[in-house]
Image (cartoon, rainbow, N blue to C red; front, side, top):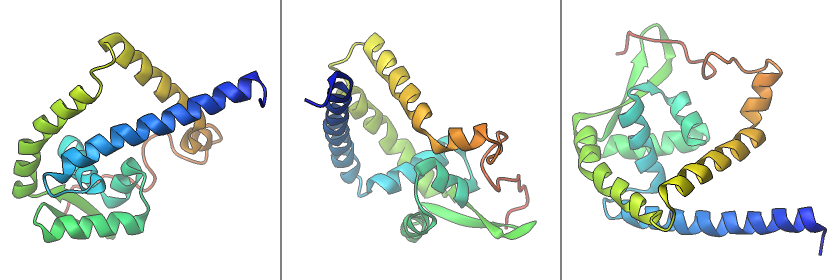
Length: 170
């Protein structure tokens, strides 16, 4: 209708949208049984697997605005699952880290969630899962503004913006 290349691209777009919706809905339902939203779970996941980090880096990894990150951090902090720490070298810099309760909760629920995700992709063979992962990462990298900004020297290739190490947290 719009040309072979455009029609194929549109079909791919619609297939991606439908698949993303179905996968996200399964993940959302699984996570909800633990009293968490997707973004809350994602923050716990990042902090569990990557450790304490600046809230700006958490926001970047989760593709969230600063305001959304603050909202999620506040909710998890009120539940006693994470805490904020201030860098003593730069008081403007806040780090987030899991509390013992947050670590214990995540250790309890993540294996169950990971198994649910495994079941979500059962229709694909291991080779197909690897192939689709590679193709989606390739597409994402080609569209990423961060890649383009790095290429022209606006973003550092040494890490996230404003991500100096701070060993002195209070």
